[in-house]
Image (cartoon, rainbow, N blue to C red; front, side):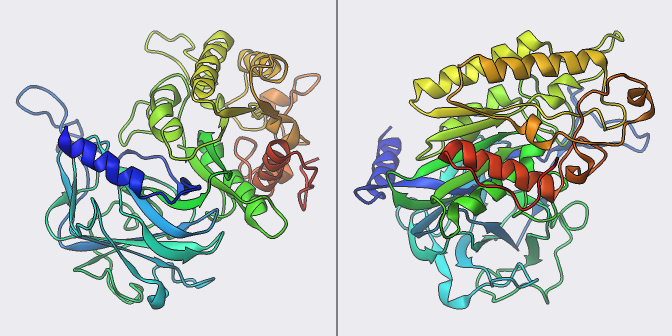
Length: 451
């Protein structure tokens, strides 16, 4: 208990009077554990008959990651997660620096900005217990708004990277052998062959927050949702709709605000996504950890529903998608929690998906429309962001949908990154602009609309 008290006291004393900590960048973590298959293609099992799980393990490597800040500041700290870990995770050294402008080398840093990170009041090495997060000590570093920040972590011993966030829309991560935390760039070093896929360089590992000290009146916004919030099919970390919102707020003439992204692709609000690696604990279960408990929070934007509607067929052959009542009840739980914490919550209407082959059914569309009517008309939210209306437009109807008269609403093909489920950069810019207009009571227009 004494250790907990001292840690709480240190954290509290680390904030300057008249200021608070906010998440300038955030990504929600999910589990990287996967089942290990045997030669027969079936999952291996332990002596108790349970499937054997595996997550990438590293040793004597440096993990360097490049993230995009929203709001700027002069004092910064990072948040690291071992929430899904099954054993303690030891980080031997950590550093933070500014990235090199518009360089294609996302591992390059500005050496004069390089700072050592410490933990628990000055320790250079830290161990994160399973199921826990840790926040570094604050460090003085001028971080301009909308700038790239590079975090380097060195693992001298064995370490399992259980927590990660996939699909960052760019080669933001590099991992090399040895302690390279102070290197100006890792581009000329051979990547360590310990991560899945193409070295996992488009994933984020362990790093769940970049936090900035800002004036207490600053608004801090977290976008909470599934792949559309995560920015699936965006061409860069700067082109998801939460990033577009952050860009408008923190450019000259905007109202500076911190914007974090707690979206997870394939996630549902009401039900855990089964699979390995996991596509996310349900939104209801992770809401406190990924959203409400974040420092300095003032506003939540929630956009869920498409995956809940499209859950598919259960083992008995019956549709297992969510009902309108289930979704509305889940939204009301979020509203209650947010208002109990004296925060604001905004709802985005569920975007149409009739253009995406295999997604549309009359039943799903009826539920989508019913839930959207409730979002717009119930008065329970502090504001409504009508994403569905903003991205609706002409689309290429799949054969079965094309026979319907009139055609159901679909995502405008000019704003779709696929055939009508996920937006492209243009669609995300429309959504980010609309979100800014609703939260800050403006009437900005995107460079290109969807209609």
